[in-house]
Image (tube, rainbow, N blue to C red):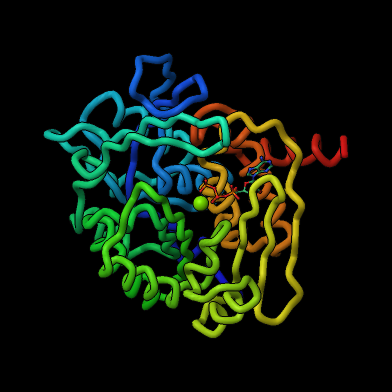
Amino acid sequence: MAVLTPDALGPTVCVGEILVEIVATTIGEGFRAAQPLTGPYPSGAPAIFIDQCGRIGGSAAMIGAVGRDDFGAVNLDRLRRDGVDVSAVSEDADFPTGSAFVRYRADGSRDFVYNIATSAAARFGLSDAVRALIDRAGHLHVMGTALSMPAARSVIEYAAPRIRARGGSLSVDPNLRKELARDAETEVLFKRLIALSDLLLPSGDELERAAGITGQDAAITRLFEMGVKEIALKQGASGATVFTPDAKPVHHPGFRVEERDPTGAGDCFGGAYVACRRLGLSIPDALRYGNAAGARNVTVLGPMEGAGTRAELDAFIAKQEGSA
Ligand code: ATP
Ligand code: MG
């Protein structure tokens, strides 16, 4: 049986922060001095994920909120352009669209200044439009960053069992961020969602943190015992590896590109991988598209500016493999 439910059951739904991102154009430490900036770019990990999912041709829908301002329009226009159903994205008349300022350090790490909790991004809930979407959803993708928002937590807690009950599937990208602290209650929910998920998309030490155990092999074994059926481990420039309980791991070494802006790579990988699996592609084929989506996105400044259509990713792959 397929690990993820096909698109025919209903769209892949992602819940959480919709932001604009303002990017510092110089490398350095944070934002304590005036400096050149560029943006606004549409952003927010869940929004990047769902944008890539729709852009590659998957059935995709978003739950969240923007302000009734230009930053909100930047996001709604992009999501609509890429085929994402935004019927469950609300427009807040009183609060501005959420934002994230990001600046890279020389060692590649990032400093963020977020305005999420006190923005429109955090102000949504179980509206009629949100319930209606959940009632026709085929898959739920949970983005770890969203779990720091009470609004997203309550929608995800409502949606997960319902989408499951109608035969839908679930994926989780832990996406742990040092700037987004979590309380004990959220950790419990995170663990519960991991145990409910069919597909896990961790990177780095998120694999071990999701399993609650150290050592890669032990973590993978534990996650399969918990009921996870497929693990796509993202490995940055080294590509990604997919683990399943009954077969050998499948590795794709990743495409060689010049990295201009790593933000959004994991989200684009996930959006493409989930869409492809739901469209019936095999693990190796979905992995190739996931890697291509992540790699293509890092070549472009802006968190989702490099998200690719299937034709764009085919062209990217052909060029890469031709020149290898
Ligand atoms: P994020 O910081 O967006 O959460 P992540 O840590 O979840 O990212 P990464 O492993 O950094 O995920 O990137 C996801 C995928 O994107 C990788 O598995 C790889 O396929 C591709 N990718 C990322 N960086 C590069 C790179 N420099 N060169 C080629 N491919 C890359
Ligand atoms: Mg990530």
